[in-house]
Image (cartoon, rainbow, N blue to C red):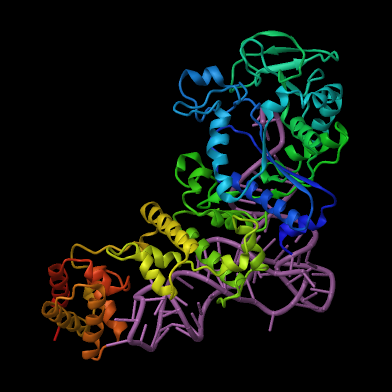
Amino acid sequence: MYWADEIAAAAEGPQVVNDSKTPSGTVHVGSLRGVVLHDAIVRALRERGVETRFLYGVDDLDPMDAAAHLTGDSVERYMGMPLAMVPAPEGSGAASYARHFVGELFMATFAPLGVAPEIYWMSERYADGSVDPYIRVALDRADLVRDIYRRVSHVEKREDWLPISIICEVCGRSGTTLATDWNGHTVAYSCRPDLVDWAKGCGHSGRVIPFKGRAKLKWNVDWAAKWSLFGVTIEGCGKDLATAGGSRERSDAIARDVFDREPPLNVSYEFLNIGGKKMSTSKGLGVSAHDMAALLPPELIRFLFLRSKPRRALDFDPEGDTIPGLFDEFDRIAAATAGLPVRGELPPDPDRIFRASLVDAAADAAVEGARFRPPFRHLALLIQVPGVDVEARLAAEKGSPLDERETEILRERVEICRRWLAAFAPDRYRVEVQSEVPSSVAELDPPQRAYMATLADAADGERPASGDAWQDLIFRTAKAADMASGYAFAAIYAAFLGRANGPRAGWLLASLEHAFVVERLRSAAGGQRT
RNA sequence: GGGCCGCUAGCUCAAUGGUAGAGCAGCUGACUCUUAAUCAGCUGGUUCAGGGUUCGAGCCCCUGGCGGCUCACCA
């Protein structure tokens, strides 16, 4: 059974699926795995008639702890402040740093992917008092929280430590404050210059009532509090959090012991590596989630994540064969879903994977699967030949006009092909007419040379102007010389492209200057031995 | 140092303990019209290594190797 269906089948009663994100800067494609994975679970639940809410939270009251997108003196000014209070980068109209990177850039990828969770912002939940009951419990049971840190992670906290960060009334930082002495009404805190090495507190100390957004629970407690607040029953997380003794285990224990609630079902998922390496912001395009959206159509992004089990590490190498390979595999599974014959063996539940990959959850998978999809590598080649009407040509290959959706798929693929060829494609996918006679011509046989000489003469006489005319001439000349057409084509590719194969030769030659073509054919034939 | 996950064909990945597979790449052949298309076929493996359990192990157990992550701060 498909992994999301297994999860759904085990669920009892109404479900609340939650996922969340700390908005500390540009969001990597890897984070889309969580989004897509949770969506797949939600869809599987709803298909079974299970009443399901899908929530997505932004932890924007967390302190700014990485300076990646801050510059100059704003680093000193904003580090340690809640992300909801840090201004958006210059040029952005967003209300805060968090709203810019997650609210605008990252979440813009959701709708195209067919993902529509209810979105909440923790800064608002804290401010409106929703979290206050949990803050009170956590403070009352601070000793239990300390025990859990000790037992689960072998971390020893100070005797007077409290699982909360006060937002300093003077400087506005929360990452730099140390809270102590909960008396049931207020807590004492001090904002320390040296509490953490990534931000400097102002030195203020005082007492505050830690409610209504004036304080934030520490990460693990905050997570567990959210589960109680929203009644979360299923929430996966990346493997970095899911390790033994790690964050998830601490939060699970806090949920049970402090908030008296069974933690949600965990689905831990692996990372998406780029070119075999961990993702890195310095690598540029294709790494951030919003750039990824320009490099793959939405259903391919879903497919990338949903065809593999969550625990499977994925490798996405935009410079390798990952992209064309994904398209090929997707097309094969689409065809299989439509009941069309496909070559080779299929993965288990191909139609289920295909359905999960569709943007529209309600779409008819058989209808979608039957649509004409141009093979990616073929398309990459076609668009490199000047003067080809790609849409007309593919309609001819399909055998009937493309419908509206098929035209849309085609245009989307053409666009992606262009970007891929421009930035990532391996050289063997690039076709380029050589400005000098390629050296590979030396390996041609005498009959091939003779063929090109004959073809040059014939072309001078007939002056073929169209791809069709050229193609016809190429075949006729080969037949007249009693030469296998493949053999003849190989000579032409060697002479113009310096390789053994290429796009349809007639259209290639028709796109070039007539004089250049004839001259090149004669030069390549020139070394003819007799 | 402890823990978790992974390691299967050149690449990307499948395989309820029951004959190790597919796609792509590669190679061979066909084709007067999709010549990087399509069609037919072929090659390709000590399943990281070594033990063990079993009638039978890619799968279960143990040991080791390699890679990633994590366990201190923070989130």
